[in-house]
Length: 565
Image (cartoon, rainbow, N blue to C red):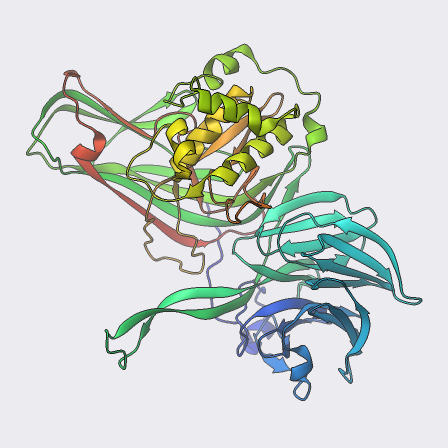
């Protein structure tokens, strides 16, 4: 198989560009930029608004050459956001006021002042679109005479920048880590996708310099931690601090309307999972079978190759899932082994598009799913009064599957806060103490959903560290991770994260990972144990953690091209 992927590379020089080499869209890091909070297109260049310095930056996407356009007017653009350009007029917002100015003079004039702070501005001919997180709406104005035409509710819960392309209204949401495509006339959601990085702060379409095809670029702004070398620090030379992080990256989208999902940027990654035999207690095991689940094939994940590490294994199918089986005639306390698997994966972000109306007339849950996915098969405490009462309170009188599950999720988020715990307790204990790990969130969600007739199962097991710009470097996750999938009769399984969307005290909670997963999740072992050990002398009670130490490693080899084909 011929693998094609894009690696981070220096900007193409003018000589290379004119030599006929194909332009490869990639990450753009504008010099002198601190926090880009709006981008727009002007001819064949990107225009970026740096809200910290107040710079209007003209950026060549081929060479990264950057020019400050407003050398004498930077004060007017400090803390500004929502950049838009229509013909010879530039639009932006600052605090509650929307401004416009001539591109030649760059002298701002007030268009309107809103009751709440403005996050985004978009323009199409004489129609002005203004988004405000505080207000919760996109307000649509006519320019002359100035009047409010209508309002659309925002699709997400965070600060949203926007732009217009033809009949499409595009938004990016910083909290939701998402880009939305809406119908410009009605505000109806067409689809949404997850962005490969956190903190999207602006978006625009720019024609490919060679093919003319529209490329969607998204800007990102935030902070990143780093270790600073400070020889003047009396407490030690190295210290943890933060620095501004801002850049522009192409966003690739594949929308599958028939199957109700959209894919976004993907990466080729190599994942290794291995066990190092290092037992804590003496034992003598006979005829050992050590099973480790293998990565799954899904809409967003392709398994290109799997090979053994250390020792050979045979492959079995368990409940439709691939499992590596390592067999030992015997294992003794003094033995040392290293064994596991290495997989080459294509992973992408995915967001499923289902509305509550889509599941109003679904068929009943098949009996075999009722028998397996509506029962307490993993110490879920479904018979306890506290869990049964919570299951009733969570949904109230709701009957729609999607609304029920979203109400259950929000109910759990209202009552739990995330924290690492030394062991996984049962859902009744977790609800009473109000604190839980990702596995404990999953337990509570499973119990409440199953009691309300929603088939669910556990999924995991690891997340690649989300450092897409650190390629060809071994990366090790700090912890394992689990989430869940729920079943829509007549369609199939959809993902729902356990705790990462529980980011705001008492809500409103983002829905980025409700029916969605980012690119860095590795889907392994759906509905089956990730790892088990069995032996002929089963009377010996030794956990896997007492037998071995696991080693998990990811290496991001490059960014995938836009198409799956």
